[in-house]
Figure 1 (cartoon, rainbow, N blue to C red):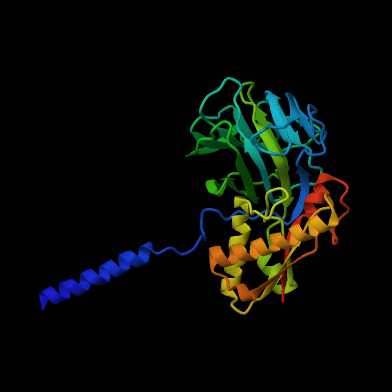
Figure 2: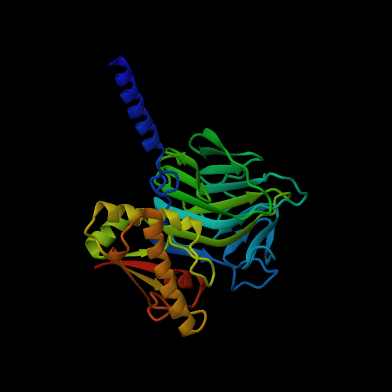
Length: 356
């Protein structure tokens, strides 16, 4: 009898062990980034001349628009140390996201990046030297070290630095990364590719609005930036889709002229999938839209392929029944705003989820 009881107990433990190891799809608690609802600054540097400094940025150093054989598109390379500030005219408010492609580069080689600081600053665009080495009235400084990313916050009221921390991470020079900041009041999360590297609940000191993003580099650091975007507001996916009947997703991104989803789309796809799992009767229509670049026929085909790619990802990666989704594409026929500058084109390139 004891032998039988022991055998049954071992079988139960084995089943529990196997169950714990079973995959549950690609839903991850670590990558939950969803960009803000309203784009207020965008620059892919496509309209800039090679060799020029981009007109919507300010600096105390120098930089230029370049191309690279390995990674398509145009890139803004920071070539001489100083500060670099995208001049977004709309205040960020309390909730916003900042994201960009990032290629670490060092003038004298090396296998780990260093000499780059990212700041979220409470200050004014007209006075970028305010505060000196600790810029603005208050701020958060995130520093890239050889094998870690560290942070510290500060304010004039506290006469300098207040709190700090770090997380292990190494940027490899010459590789391409997608960097994203998600600010919700005092909380700041930093993502690199699909990794959540920092999540600091009190990163920003209370009592200030932080509406300046600032990069500072040493002369040795010469990184390249691409597809730089600032979007404000909280992603209100659930309310907009369930109550208002439509959600415009800017978090779903594709390779240029392709229906290949970029990895940073995962956070938005994850939220859509969770919503559909929680509401099993919900059926949606997925509609792709493009900007005005290219001919009408190609854009129409591309928008339809992209909508289908989103549906297929929701089915393959998250188990959403294909029959609950239909797809369509409108090409460039339904712009939200005139296609007259890079930011407006970014607003028109979108995927819409419409409740049926």
